Every structure is written in C-alpha cells, then in structure tokens.
Image (cartoon, rainbow, N blue to C red; front, side, top):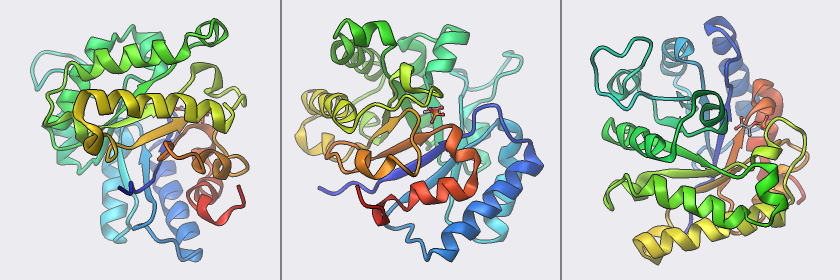
Length: 261
Ligand code: PEP
C-alpha cells in the first residue's frame, strides 16, 4: 500500500505573520518553478498561532497547494484556560495538521504521554491530523533502549485514541539528540525505529491499517541528507525544523525524489 510522503516544516517560535506570508510565498514559487507535483509529496508548514490567519489568507488567495497547521492545541474544547487555543479555533482557520508532543513541549512544559494523547484526540475531533512526536534522548540511545522507549511512548499516546481515529494520525520519530544539533541519525537508525513503530501499529490496529499510517523522521533533515533517509522503507516523510525556515532549502527537501540517495 503506498503512502504519500509528507514534508512538514516546523517553524517553532520563528517568523512573525509578515515573515510567514513572505516565506510561504517563496516556498510556493520555488516549488512552482520546479513543476512540483503535490500529488506525489504533501507539503505543510507548522506555524506559530499568530501566523495562521495570514497563511490561510495567502494560500486561499493564490490557490496554493501548501498545507499548514499549528504546533500545539489545548486538550480542552473551550472555557477558562487563559492562553490556550482550541482545536475548533484551529479547524476554523482550515488547519490540516497539529503537532503534538514535540520534545520541546515535553521538556519545557512537562507534557506527558497522556496529555499528548489527549491533544491528539482533540486535533482528530476537530477534523485535523495530529503529528504525534516520539523519540529518545541521548542517554537512552547510548543505553541501547531507544526502540523500547519509543514504543512505550507510542503505546501510551495511542491508548488515548480509539481504534477508529488512531489510524488517521501521523507519527514523527524524532531522536532528541538529533534535533537542532546538526547530528542526523543515519538512515539505518531512522529505519530501525520507524520500522519498529510500524510493527507496533500493526499489532495495535492490524497490518493493513499500519501500512497506511505515515511515520516521519525528524532531526537535522536537510537537502543534503533527505534522499538517503527517504529511501528507507518505513520513513514516509520528514518533520523539518531549522531547514524549513529557508523556503528555497525547504523546497529542495520537498524535491527529495530528484536527488541521488
Ligand atoms: C524539529 O523541530 O522537529 C526538528 C526536527 O528540528 P531540526 O530539523 O532543526 O533538527
């Protein structure tokens, strides 16, 4: 069963709404110049909340095929939760995706697997696709426990989702030691864990369903290394941080199929 690759740019807390508009426009032009086929690779930017209305406006006005989404969502539908943003608010802005459980939110905001699962459920309930981030820190990798650790995160997060909604999610395997460090996992490292994630999804939801769920790799992805990573059978795309802030470089990453692995 074929899975359409997804290249998703996680802008983190970068780019105000004016910069976001210009960046999306440049990404669109760079892909247009290359006759990019969005049916073969889906492209998304995951932007700060304050950028989303502007991105909606520019993508609508110029009929762009670039999708977009948020980097977090509240577990609550509405109410007295100062500073939070609900799934309904994001859906109203036509967001396609929501990142949940990024390691920076787990680290700086103490998000637990249970909360990440609840956020994924909130996104799915709003008709959006959660990009569920999992992955180990360096000490766990050095101890050789990275597969077991990551699968325990998968078990815990997916236990919050029902069997009907769960298969609509996207998983992003992001070894923490490779995020923003320039230290990229080898293609074999990425495949080892992405393959193990798919096996676990097959145990949970059946082989046929597991073959439809996209598993991304994230951690210092660049145009120079993306083709080799994407050549692995269980890697279905990239969650790209730093390199996605440069729209021409991100466009080259999206065009990984034209590179020699
Ligand atoms: C990320 O933010 O999810 C990420 C993978 O960052 P970078 O590509 O900069 O390592």
